[in-house]
Amino acid sequence: MFSTLTRKHDIEHWDAEDVAAWEAGGKDIAKRNLIWSVFAEHIGFSVWSIWSVMVLFMPTDVFGIDTAGKFFLGAVPTLVGGFMRIPYTVATAKFGGRNWTIFSALALLVPLLLTLYFINQPGTSYTTFLVIAAFAGLGGGNFSSSMSNINVFYPQRLKGWALGMNAGGGNIGVPVIQLIGLAVIATLGNAYGNASLVCVVYLIAVVVAALGAALFMDNVKNQKADLSFMITALKVPQSWAIAFLYIGTFGSFIGYSFAFGQVLQINFKAGGASAAQAALHAASIAFIGPLLGSLARPYGGKWADRIGGSRVTLYMFGAMTAATAVVAIASTVGDGAGRPTGAVLVAMILGFVALFVISGTANGAVTKIIPSVFEAKSRSLEGNSATRAQWAQNTSGALIGFVGAIGALGGVGINLVLRSSYSATNSATTAFWVFLAFYVVCAAVCWTVFLRRPSLRTLDTADSDVVAEAEAFVLEAESASTATTSRSRRA
Image (cartoon, rainbow, N blue to C red):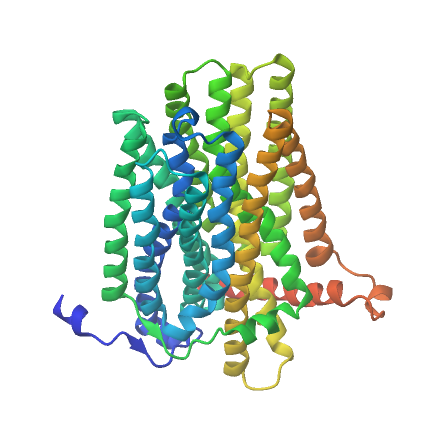
């Protein structure tokens, strides 16, 4: 323990691609940093999504916030968290991964303390609650700093797994806080005062995360991911396509995570349950989707390591379209019956859970595309292999933050579309059909940009840069990555 307290936490030079150094102890250092990065990001996701739980303790007759208002309350931290991801991306390079993890964890005390106080003040204005929810957005930024940091520690052949594990472990923060909310509601009820227990649990967890980062994480001194690398990354056409696809994958995961509990609560209440029963039923189911989606994310990265991120992403968007069709049709049938029947509720729940699992898998696959693109792009640069590898690492790390920010906006969109649908029709059916159409567009973009093989005539034209670069950068990189992984396994 003494050596842990006194050891130096700064690594002057880190080269994850140095196989000898990796086997000589580098992989143990990377694993240690990954574990505590996952835990800190996990707590960040929980705090980011805390209002998906708090609204279950806020009956309309006490707080005066209607269904549409609660959906908007969930959209605010999603929006703020999305924007925070851009500066958080470069923070680990500027201040060090260990240092920033400590600071970003302790910063979560602010939204937790504000929530703890004001959730016990039912006369508080709606505007005040919006401001408090905005502070919870700080937890959303932790994803980008964590992913950018772990991107440095792992070699190209393992990035899909490592980034998927890091992101998936963080994503689990959403169902865990919902499980804690369920435990409180099931044992003590959904009175607003009981919500304080959820906040207290996370006040303790934040301190543990900061302490663990201080003791066990490291700063990589040669890590670079400043905004100039982000600008460079955005000059590559495929970067914008990746950002768009991430709206459909991560945006769906985080958007449904915030909204699923409310949608269930509304439907259970419409089906005849009391307000307390509806809250309990919703809480007992809402965590399942985010949990399974989080667990699926590392497998998306692992499959992408084997067969290519773009291929897995395309398959997942096809599956998401089918799952959304199940939810939309069930909701349409429920509207026709005048209330959600048991069969309708079962179909909607199964469809939603499938959406979580599929979007989680797709998250891991899309993340893998990023380093694949820039690893292949670096081959056209001047300089030695180490210089090219450093450029690819820094550029992909910077893009992860931008893509994460844009993807989070998908979560905002889901909550706003649901809010609009309920306001206009008192039903979510219209929103579900909108989501289905969007997934069809995402599948088309994935195929067109990353998988469509251009003809020889097309390749000879000056207007084929997007398709040609996608062909050269992504397919070649993913094939090379797959071959490298296979050789490593045989060895």
